Image (cartoon, rainbow, N blue to C red; front, top):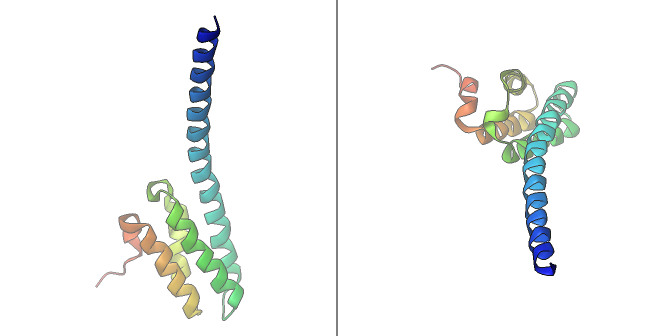
Amino acid sequence: MKRRSLNFGCLLGVICLALGIAMATGSNDTGRLKELRETISEVRKMNGPSKPGANAAEHLSQLTEKIDPKKVDDKTLDGMVSLRDTSNDFVRAWVAVALGNLGPRAKVAVPPF
């Protein structure tokens, strides 16, 4: 009897661990996508030569390092691409890094030659 409950306890632990990992992975991308959208909005509000705008854009690049590019929807991607038009050189540089982190998903950001 003890042996059976030990095995059941181990099995239950493994199942809980697997579910926790699956839920954490999914919620992280969802949370990061929401934070990505909010950060795009912050950067847009801070247009012009400002350090907070550059810091927000740097945060944008950090977020795109951690998110699956396939999870970034077209509207969010378009929002990021639109930030290239800012007058702040540092913001443009960080936005370029953020778009680069998305790899081929961000090919719409490349201007035609």
